[in-house]
Length: 278
Image 1: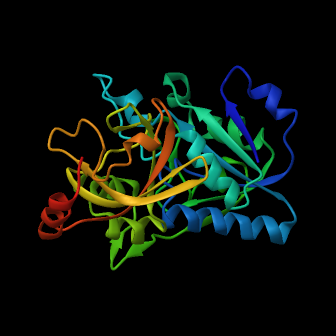
Image 2: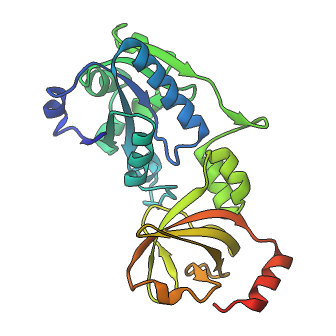
Protein backbone atom coordinates (compact mmCIF):
# COMPACT_ATOMS: atom_id res chain seq x y z
CA UNK A 1 0.00 0.00 0.00
CA UNK A 2 1.21 3.51 -0.82
CA UNK A 3 0.55 6.39 1.58
CA UNK A 4 0.28 9.79 -0.11
CA UNK A 5 0.22 13.02 1.89
CA UNK A 6 -1.90 15.32 -0.27
CA UNK A 7 -2.14 19.11 -0.12
CA UNK A 8 -2.80 22.10 -2.37
CA UNK A 9 0.86 22.34 -3.45
CA UNK A 10 1.43 18.74 -4.55
CA UNK A 11 -2.07 17.85 -5.74
CA UNK A 12 -1.24 18.44 -9.41
CA UNK A 13 1.78 16.12 -9.16
CA UNK A 14 -0.24 13.24 -7.70
CA UNK A 15 -3.05 13.85 -10.18
CA UNK A 16 -0.68 12.78 -12.95
CA UNK A 17 -0.02 9.47 -11.16
CA UNK A 18 -3.61 8.63 -10.28
CA UNK A 19 -5.48 5.74 -11.87
CA UNK A 20 -9.22 4.96 -11.85
CA UNK A 21 -10.23 3.82 -8.38
CA UNK A 22 -12.99 3.28 -5.86
CA UNK A 23 -12.47 5.51 -2.83
CA UNK A 24 -13.68 5.23 0.75
CA UNK A 25 -14.03 8.64 2.41
CA UNK A 26 -13.83 9.52 6.11
CA UNK A 27 -11.56 10.46 8.99
CA UNK A 28 -11.43 6.82 10.15
CA UNK A 29 -9.87 7.48 13.56
CA UNK A 30 -9.61 4.11 15.28
CA UNK A 31 -10.92 2.21 12.23
CA UNK A 32 -13.80 0.71 14.19
CA UNK A 33 -16.47 -1.70 12.93
CA UNK A 34 -18.43 1.13 11.29
CA UNK A 35 -15.34 2.33 9.43
CA UNK A 36 -14.52 -1.22 8.36
CA UNK A 37 -17.97 -1.61 6.84
CA UNK A 38 -17.35 1.50 4.70
CA UNK A 39 -13.91 0.26 3.61
CA UNK A 40 -15.08 -3.30 2.93
CA UNK A 41 -18.06 -2.00 0.96
CA UNK A 42 -15.68 0.08 -1.16
CA UNK A 43 -13.46 -2.99 -1.55
CA UNK A 44 -16.40 -5.01 -2.85
CA UNK A 45 -17.22 -2.35 -5.43
CA UNK A 46 -13.56 -2.15 -6.48
CA UNK A 47 -13.41 -5.91 -6.94
CA UNK A 48 -16.57 -5.98 -9.07
CA UNK A 49 -15.31 -3.11 -11.22
CA UNK A 50 -11.74 -4.45 -11.34
CA UNK A 51 -10.41 -1.15 -9.96
CA UNK A 52 -7.92 -0.29 -7.24
CA UNK A 53 -9.15 0.53 -3.73
CA UNK A 54 -8.23 3.89 -2.22
CA UNK A 55 -8.99 5.51 1.13
CA UNK A 56 -8.98 9.25 1.74
CA UNK A 57 -8.61 10.59 5.25
CA UNK A 58 -7.69 13.99 6.69
CA UNK A 59 -5.11 15.31 9.13
CA UNK A 60 -5.13 17.04 11.54
CA UNK A 61 -8.66 16.57 12.83
CA UNK A 62 -11.02 19.39 11.73
CA UNK A 63 -11.70 20.28 15.39
CA UNK A 64 -8.09 21.43 15.81
CA UNK A 65 -8.57 23.93 12.99
CA UNK A 66 -12.07 25.03 13.99
CA UNK A 67 -11.24 25.58 17.67
CA UNK A 68 -10.31 29.14 18.62
CA UNK A 69 -7.93 28.13 21.41
CA UNK A 70 -5.93 25.44 19.56
CA UNK A 71 -7.43 22.72 21.72
CA UNK A 72 -5.52 19.43 21.49
CA UNK A 73 -7.47 16.54 20.01
CA UNK A 74 -7.49 13.03 21.50
CA UNK A 75 -6.51 10.80 18.60
CA UNK A 76 -7.20 7.09 18.97
CA UNK A 77 -4.20 6.13 16.84
CA UNK A 78 -1.41 7.72 14.77
CA UNK A 79 -1.40 7.74 10.98
CA UNK A 80 1.19 4.96 10.85
CA UNK A 81 -1.09 2.58 12.76
CA UNK A 82 -4.05 3.62 10.64
CA UNK A 83 -2.04 2.87 7.50
CA UNK A 84 -1.07 -0.57 8.83
CA UNK A 85 -4.69 -1.54 9.46
CA UNK A 86 -5.83 -0.17 6.09
CA UNK A 87 -3.19 -2.24 4.33
CA UNK A 88 -4.46 -5.36 6.12
CA UNK A 89 -7.93 -4.53 4.74
CA UNK A 90 -6.64 -4.61 1.17
CA UNK A 91 -6.32 -0.88 0.50
CA UNK A 92 -3.99 0.02 -2.38
CA UNK A 93 -3.59 3.78 -1.80
CA UNK A 94 -4.04 5.81 1.35
CA UNK A 95 -4.48 9.55 0.75
CA UNK A 96 -3.96 11.78 3.77
CA UNK A 97 -5.25 15.26 2.96
CA UNK A 98 -3.82 18.19 4.90
CA UNK A 99 -6.75 19.78 6.70
CA UNK A 100 -6.00 23.49 7.02
CA UNK A 101 -7.90 26.76 6.67
CA UNK A 102 -7.53 26.77 2.88
CA UNK A 103 -8.96 23.27 2.65
CA UNK A 104 -11.69 24.25 5.10
CA UNK A 105 -12.79 27.08 2.80
CA UNK A 106 -13.29 24.89 -0.29
CA UNK A 107 -16.82 24.79 -1.67
CA UNK A 108 -18.27 21.28 -1.95
CA UNK A 109 -17.88 21.31 -5.73
CA UNK A 110 -14.26 22.42 -5.42
CA UNK A 111 -13.45 19.56 -3.07
CA UNK A 112 -15.02 17.04 -5.44
CA UNK A 113 -13.16 18.48 -8.43
CA UNK A 114 -9.72 18.89 -6.85
CA UNK A 115 -9.55 15.89 -4.53
CA UNK A 116 -11.81 13.25 -6.08
CA UNK A 117 -12.11 13.80 -9.82
CA UNK A 118 -8.47 14.87 -10.10
CA UNK A 119 -7.50 11.69 -8.24
CA UNK A 120 -9.44 9.61 -10.80
CA UNK A 121 -12.22 8.50 -8.44
CA UNK A 122 -14.89 6.56 -10.32
CA UNK A 123 -16.96 5.49 -7.33
CA UNK A 124 -17.06 6.96 -3.82
CA UNK A 125 -18.21 5.17 -0.66
CA UNK A 126 -18.88 6.93 2.65
CA UNK A 127 -20.96 6.70 5.78
CA UNK A 128 -24.39 8.30 5.95
CA UNK A 129 -23.05 11.20 8.03
CA UNK A 130 -19.97 12.06 5.95
CA UNK A 131 -19.77 15.75 5.01
CA UNK A 132 -17.39 17.86 2.95
CA UNK A 133 -16.81 21.41 1.76
CA UNK A 134 -17.15 24.74 3.53
CA UNK A 135 -19.24 24.43 6.70
CA UNK A 136 -19.87 20.78 5.83
CA UNK A 137 -22.39 21.81 3.18
CA UNK A 138 -21.71 18.74 1.07
CA UNK A 139 -22.98 15.27 1.97
CA UNK A 140 -23.03 11.82 0.47
CA UNK A 141 -26.54 12.33 -0.98
CA UNK A 142 -25.37 15.22 -3.20
CA UNK A 143 -21.88 13.94 -4.06
CA UNK A 144 -22.94 12.46 -7.39
CA UNK A 145 -24.55 15.76 -8.38
CA UNK A 146 -21.52 17.77 -7.24
CA UNK A 147 -19.37 15.63 -9.54
CA UNK A 148 -21.67 16.34 -12.50
CA UNK A 149 -22.62 12.64 -12.33
CA UNK A 150 -19.07 11.52 -13.08
CA UNK A 151 -18.75 9.71 -9.74
CA UNK A 152 -21.11 6.98 -8.64
CA UNK A 153 -21.87 6.80 -4.93
CA UNK A 154 -22.64 4.21 -2.27
CA UNK A 155 -23.92 5.37 1.12
CA UNK A 156 -23.29 3.07 4.08
CA UNK A 157 -25.95 3.19 6.78
CA UNK A 158 -25.34 3.47 10.51
CA UNK A 159 -23.55 0.56 12.15
CA UNK A 160 -24.62 0.06 15.75
CA UNK A 161 -23.92 -2.16 18.72
CA UNK A 162 -27.08 -3.11 20.60
CA UNK A 163 -28.83 -0.04 19.23
CA UNK A 164 -26.08 2.52 19.88
CA UNK A 165 -24.26 4.02 16.92
CA UNK A 166 -20.60 2.97 16.74
CA UNK A 167 -18.49 6.13 16.57
CA UNK A 168 -14.98 7.35 17.32
CA UNK A 169 -16.48 9.58 20.03
CA UNK A 170 -17.96 6.55 21.81
CA UNK A 171 -14.64 4.70 21.50
CA UNK A 172 -12.79 7.59 23.16
CA UNK A 173 -15.33 7.52 26.00
CA UNK A 174 -14.81 3.79 26.52
CA UNK A 175 -11.01 4.21 26.61
CA UNK A 176 -11.22 7.07 29.11
CA UNK A 177 -13.50 4.92 31.29
CA UNK A 178 -11.24 1.86 30.99
CA UNK A 179 -14.04 -0.31 29.59
CA UNK A 180 -11.73 -2.44 27.46
CA UNK A 181 -13.97 -5.48 26.99
CA UNK A 182 -16.82 -3.34 25.70
CA UNK A 183 -14.28 -1.43 23.62
CA UNK A 184 -13.09 -4.59 21.87
CA UNK A 185 -16.67 -5.33 20.78
CA UNK A 186 -17.16 -1.85 19.35
CA UNK A 187 -13.68 -1.52 17.86
CA UNK A 188 -13.64 -5.02 16.41
CA UNK A 189 -10.28 -5.84 18.04
CA UNK A 190 -8.42 -5.13 21.27
CA UNK A 191 -7.22 -1.57 21.72
CA UNK A 192 -3.49 -1.28 21.19
CA UNK A 193 -1.14 1.57 22.11
CA UNK A 194 2.45 2.33 21.23
CA UNK A 195 4.66 2.94 24.27
CA UNK A 196 8.30 3.33 25.28
CA UNK A 197 10.10 2.29 28.47
CA UNK A 198 11.63 5.19 30.45
CA UNK A 199 13.37 2.99 33.01
CA UNK A 200 10.54 3.07 35.54
CA UNK A 201 7.32 2.81 33.55
CA UNK A 202 5.87 2.80 30.06
CA UNK A 203 4.79 6.08 28.51
CA UNK A 204 2.53 6.56 25.50
CA UNK A 205 3.96 7.54 22.15
CA UNK A 206 2.04 10.39 20.44
CA UNK A 207 -1.53 10.08 19.17
CA UNK A 208 -2.76 7.40 21.55
CA UNK A 209 -5.14 7.65 24.52
CA UNK A 210 -4.22 6.52 28.03
CA UNK A 211 -7.04 4.53 29.67
CA UNK A 212 -8.57 5.41 33.03
CA UNK A 213 -6.72 4.76 36.27
CA UNK A 214 -6.81 1.16 37.48
CA UNK A 215 -5.23 -2.23 36.93
CA UNK A 216 -5.39 -3.95 33.54
CA UNK A 217 -4.65 -7.33 32.05
CA UNK A 218 -2.47 -6.67 29.00
CA UNK A 219 -0.14 -8.24 26.47
CA UNK A 220 3.12 -6.38 25.89
CA UNK A 221 4.76 -7.03 22.52
CA UNK A 222 8.37 -6.03 21.99
CA UNK A 223 10.84 -7.23 19.34
CA UNK A 224 8.79 -10.34 18.66
CA UNK A 225 8.48 -11.21 22.37
CA UNK A 226 5.12 -11.42 24.15
CA UNK A 227 4.54 -10.78 27.86
CA UNK A 228 1.06 -11.34 29.30
CA UNK A 229 0.96 -9.40 32.56
CA UNK A 230 -0.84 -6.76 34.62
CA UNK A 231 -0.16 -3.04 34.60
CA UNK A 232 -1.36 -0.19 36.78
CA UNK A 233 -2.30 3.33 35.78
CA UNK A 234 -2.20 5.45 38.95
CA UNK A 235 -4.64 8.22 39.82
CA UNK A 236 -2.30 10.91 38.49
CA UNK A 237 -2.08 8.96 35.20
CA UNK A 238 1.64 9.73 34.88
CA UNK A 239 2.57 6.41 33.28
CA UNK A 240 1.87 2.70 32.89
CA UNK A 241 3.49 0.67 35.67
CA UNK A 242 4.27 -3.04 35.74
CA UNK A 243 2.93 -5.20 38.57
CA UNK A 244 5.52 -7.91 37.95
CA UNK A 245 9.28 -7.62 38.22
CA UNK A 246 9.74 -7.42 34.43
CA UNK A 247 11.38 -4.01 34.33
CA UNK A 248 14.86 -5.46 33.81
CA UNK A 249 13.70 -7.02 30.55
CA UNK A 250 13.32 -3.62 28.90
CA UNK A 251 15.96 -1.14 27.82
CA UNK A 252 15.59 2.65 28.30
CA UNK A 253 13.61 4.22 25.44
CA UNK A 254 12.83 0.76 24.04
CA UNK A 255 9.57 0.85 22.09
CA UNK A 256 6.77 -1.65 22.57
CA UNK A 257 3.05 -2.13 22.03
CA UNK A 258 0.48 -2.76 24.73
CA UNK A 259 -2.67 -4.73 23.88
CA UNK A 260 -5.35 -3.93 26.46
CA UNK A 261 -7.42 -7.02 27.33
CA UNK A 262 -9.61 -5.93 30.24
CA UNK A 263 -9.69 -3.93 33.44
CA UNK A 264 -9.19 -5.99 36.61
CA UNK A 265 -12.04 -5.63 39.19
CA UNK A 266 -11.08 -3.93 42.46
CA UNK A 267 -11.28 -7.11 44.61
CA UNK A 268 -9.01 -9.00 42.22
CA UNK A 269 -6.72 -5.95 41.94
CA UNK A 270 -6.13 -6.01 45.71
CA UNK A 271 -5.21 -9.69 45.49
CA UNK A 272 -2.78 -9.07 42.63
CA UNK A 273 -1.19 -6.13 44.47
CA UNK A 274 -0.58 -8.32 47.52
CA UNK A 275 1.63 -10.76 45.58
CA UNK A 276 3.26 -8.35 43.10
CA UNK A 277 5.97 -5.79 43.18
CA UNK A 278 5.65 -2.60 41.14
